[in-house]
Length: 266
Ligand code: DHB
Ligand code: FE
Image 1 (cartoon, rainbow, N blue to C red):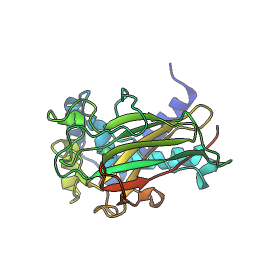
Image 2 (image 1 turned 30 degrees about the horizontal axis):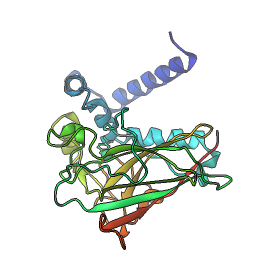
Image 3 (image 1 turned 120 degrees about the vertical axis):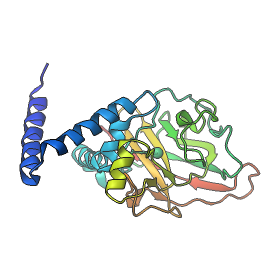
């Protein structure tokens, strides 16, 4: 059934679509090309590939609604960890792993192992939060997420961690590398049309949740990565840029990344 909000959203969208067609004097042929692009996106989409979302992302729509949603939700915006877009490669079934476990299983030789850790806190009281879940996922150094790549084991570079009594989470992963969004479909065609490249800066995805607080979907970006200023999907925010530092006294990791997250109470 139609909610009042849905009516409002659709009425406004139709108004703007008509205004757009009038302003640009859109022809039947041009409109047909748009329809074909939408159909192509639908046909390409599978469990493993969300092409409709990708198309929205290259025109900045997901990052725009992320910004609007965040502004609406949080007076806490000044002190809670900032959000960023979900992107198309999240899976709902990340395995829960022990604190300090690794999420890199069959990583290529060029993967630089990193110990990532930090504290989840209440953004207001600054107190650590035990039993928060930290969901993490990232692409391998070949630029592919595990579900795009037959050569990676299921759930490679993914995991769900629960903070301990001190609010701490920790795991081993690899330092992420820049990566092109899939550009063999309509999103890639749009990028070409606009003379843009498909690359995203090196990033790690995170979702942090705990009862009583607003969940945070975000990404963190390596400060030394290329494409911080021209992310193909417009997701970078200054506060989400992090520094990987050399790791001392740990034969298992070359780099260390400390990242704390602050949650806004409901
Ligand atoms: C998109 C986001 C990602 O994090 C990614 O790795 C690829 C694509 C996107 O927004 O389309
Ligand atoms: Fe990503």
